[in-house]
Image 1 (cartoon, rainbow, N blue to C red):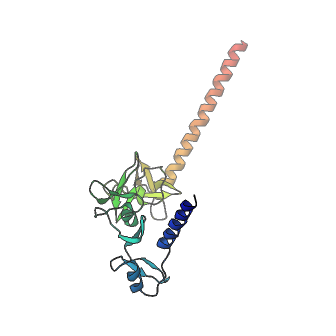
Image 2: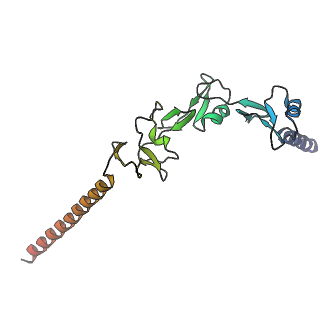
Image 3: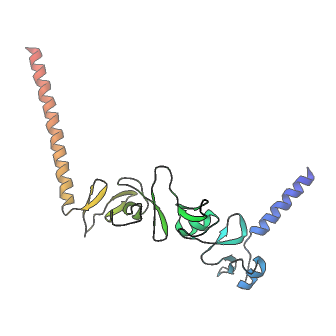
Length: 209
């Protein structure tokens, strides 16, 4: 039992030493510690960290991996997510970075990033999710906008737009149209209530006769 505890303590000590930040004054000290081709450099924080465009290997804290963009060679997912964002992965079939979609999701590559596409009314975090199509084009829905966490249509001092079949189209009098539709729906509701009331009174009157 004692020997097992000693081994566990030794393993923890080695792990802490290997994963701790290495203090430095110059990049040469990092190269001596981690190797000439390790891609570590001495930063302004006076510790050895991965150079620009490189990311720490999550399975080996003494190794830096080069970040990879769409369709570039990779060995681990973190190389892709480092550049393309969380909606990417290292496709093991081709050993290259690719965009990743979940169940019933569509994903597009645009401007060195992968975006999960969202439809009108669905939750979103940025405008491009509501604008891009699956080919990464902005032309299919350029007036899309992420409004309060949901995909909607752009309305500001310069542009008014309106949802039409899932796409946003220009509308010069969108506010007027919305108010008119509301008024029509309101009038129809009132008329229906009056109709039901009249029919009820007529029925009541017939029963009394």
